[in-house]
Length: 193
Image (cartoon, rainbow, N blue to C red; front, side, top):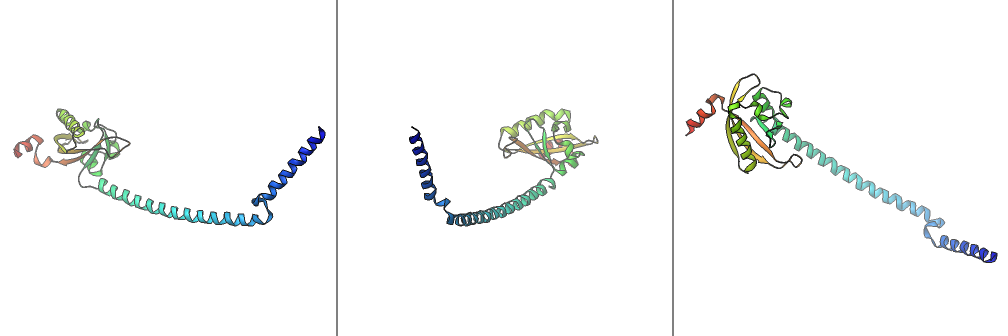
């Protein structure tokens, strides 16, 4: 039995020698070719990555330009503008709305819009907001609003529903039009009839 064990060991050694001599990757002359192929492959990958990096830079610049246009359009609009969620909580405010209400806009975000509406007209505003979310059409509402300095504003609210903000669901896009120089909201309604 010892002989078969030796023969088996010798046979295994011969098989391994055959495998190594038949494997082209292990032959002495192929090593430098393999390295050249790897270098060429790495160079091609590097060119592709540089191209993708350039495309990403261009896309980033376009995105930045688009963001700047949005900021200019939203923040510096001559019309006071606010976005609200379904409960009437302020999500975004432009500079004009903050100035109209006499409050820094960062202090307005997260507050209920009804905090600035006269008590007698909060129900009318709630109906307006419900109608905004129930209808795809623009809704309007005239209310008296209280500034932080206790001044009274007569404002026409115009709002539409938008669902273009996937992370926050539907929002109300609302413009505030100051009618203070034209008298109370009910007076202006009577004049237009």
